[in-house]
Image 1 (cartoon, rainbow, N blue to C red):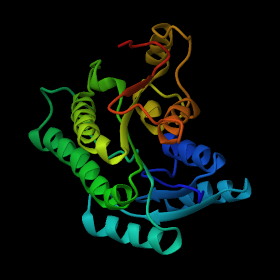
Image 2 (image 1 turned 90 degrees about the vertical axis):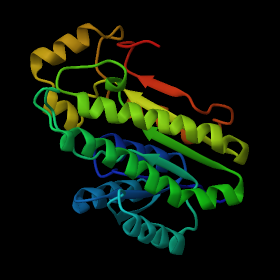
Image 3 (image 1 turned 90 degrees about the horizontal axis):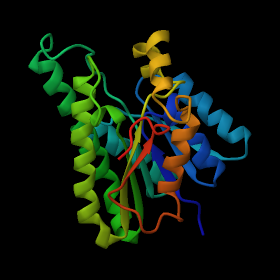
Image 4 (image 1 turned 135 degrees about the horizontal axis):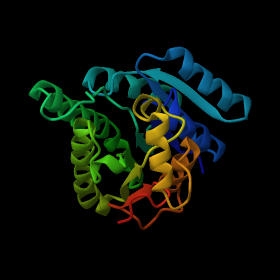
Length: 249
């Protein structure tokens, strides 16, 4: 069978980069998408190719239809349609209390989050439905269920994204497409963690985690890779909570 093609949005660093490397290691051809970090994305591709995998970089703002269509054209020319979408791209958001927040900050994050998911999903669906097989994986966060001070914009928008994805799961199941959500808690080696976790906060989070540490990007990538695989034939509309037991549901 020809190797599956996986598009990982926002994969020049962090969870996206770890996921791109792991999917390539497991035999997929990987599209490393980025918005600004072209050099970092090229480095991810170089690492994949050095390990014997196949990857390509494509720049695109996944909130916008024209760049996403151009991305698909580039992938189509080289490899054909996309079989797996890992929607990991993170749009900017304000870290502040509700009292200090404007509607532009909260509503803008909601719009960006759902518009990106809508745009990129619409683009990849035709190839998946034509072949009767596809994998859609959306990145949420434990903050969508467990509030934390200053994180209302991110938590609210990711909660909306998760429900959006469940509706996809219901609608697309009969067409052979699974749709699942990966919901990490705090992840040690990411831009978000470095921005919001000081030492004291980090220690509190570790103390609240039964497994005794915070997640690494590789832990999250493992969950994504399962959802993306042929082995995941009967899980859809589900959420993988990659948080070491910090939040159980």
